[in-house]
Amino acid sequence: MIIDPVLDYRDGEIGTSHIDDVIKFIKKKGLQIKYILDTHIHADHLSAADYVKSNEGGKTVIGKRIHDVFMHWKTKFGLSKLANFDFLVEQNSHLYFGDHIVEVIETPGHTPACVAYKIKNHLFVGDTLFAPDKGTSRTDFPGGSAESLFTSIKRLYTLPDHTNVYLCHDYPPLGAPPTSCVRLDWQKKRNVMLRQDTSEEEYVFARKQRDDALQAPRLLDIAVPFNLTFKLPH
Ligand SMILES: [Fe+2]
Image (tube, rainbow, N blue to C red; front, side, top):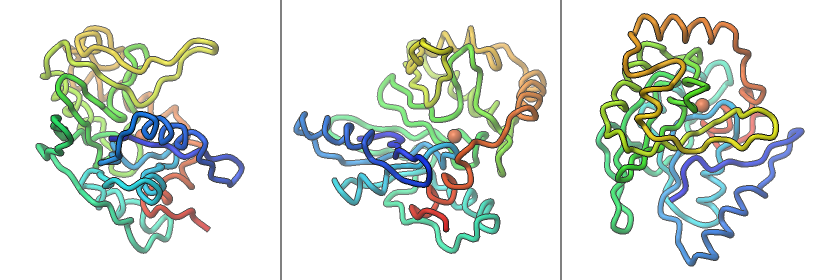
């Protein structure tokens, strides 16, 4: 199972060196790809889900409310048809692989269709929580909502403290390694934007203030249409 696979993209050209390394690793281990999961429609990179599926097989999976996301961007990018995903999942959807069950938790806020994937005490949160010193994901994209993200994260905070939270992004200082995993109790105690005791008013105010200062992601005009259709825009 691969979560949020990424294509390389530079100067108008798609590259596959990173995802090819992932595929090589899977082959070396003698594994077969069953699912390719995306946590949401990313605005800052191109998903390799379709590339992996075409070359290695596996079923593509994304949140059911991707239809809402498509409607939000359709006109801006002149999109005619959403890509075909094999499974559109929602709250409490289960995916089975080997002896494991992947539970789907809807986490709207950053986008309406965001989902987290939970395997035992491992939680792949997509863009919801970032590393504790970075806070949470932005909520200013069409269909985004700071209030919804507050509710989604508070729902994640009801999981056991020893849950391992796997992050989508980190922005470490130059030379420092990125943080990829943090325990949930650490987030509840230390997250700079949303701790266990943060009120909705306090969070929404801080989130909106931060969003007002953010620029659009550099690749948005390419990544969003590509990730919704698996075709590069003209
Ligand atoms: Fe994102």
